[in-house]
Image (cartoon, rainbow, N blue to C red; front, side):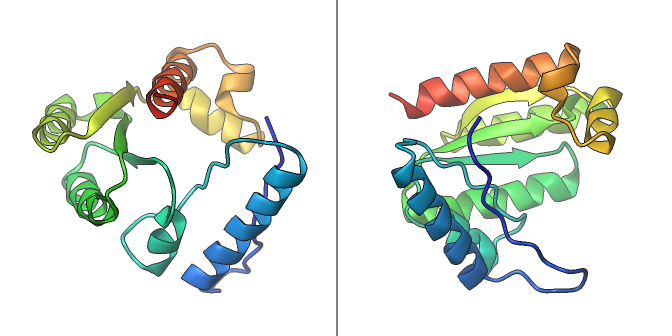
Length: 162
């Protein structure tokens, strides 16, 4: 693990592409100072200015979606946006087992558009329990979601290091 760079917004404050760019630049400075070769940017959902700022100039984008109609719709919009940048995409389906049929539809869309499926994470109450304790589930619970998250990370890190 490395340092985390973030902005602190008060309830109701609006995120902007400029704010994301500022945080990304600060992360880059810290990474260079500490000789860290990878910066991970957790972008906002959607396709607005903060998302565009999050993906501009990156080497790889991971789209995380859930198996719902709105998840499929939003994933398609995000994938189209990223494709416009010519950036490779990996796909993660979170809580895939709450609607396996929709998860399959999302997976098939990914295949049809050459989006790499990095993995599927099952629903696991341990994720929520860990968040309540302000801990990462992979640090404290060896359950199914934790294992799937670690597997997804292995796949993505191998994919981006090719």
